[in-house]
Length: 157
Image (cartoon, rainbow, N blue to C red; front, side, top):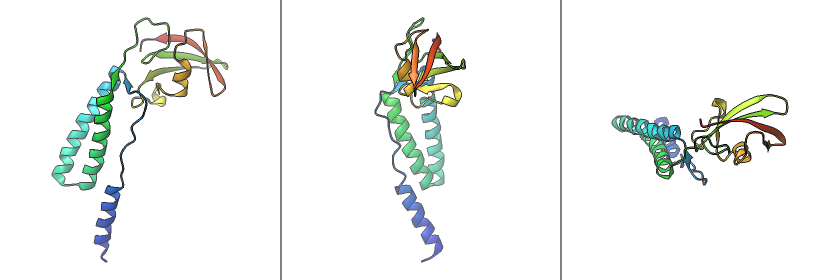
């Protein structure tokens, strides 16, 4: 068997084995920014697919098609949720400033799963921290992993 034939076969097996991207079983709540990010991702993927089809790059077509199916499903199930202005309860889409018992402050914005990026200050609405915060007010305590966090500020963004 030639080496070229083996590579082709390996490539075909890799394409067949890519599988689907798992879709969360949770409600697909999104912020306005999150919805815009999904829409932008769909535009980018459609452009990428056209380029891959032009080059007849089967592996790239398979990967992009898989991602297009994922993002199309996420767009179809997206539920835009905007926090009530001036709300004094922690809700989806709000910013929450917390102070730990060590005096350290952190700020999180509660967003959809696809938009969440803790390194950039956003957490998923189904994360343990968000779940511990929901429905609480400034001055109340949320406990996550045995650590207490006092809510010191809420913002609409």
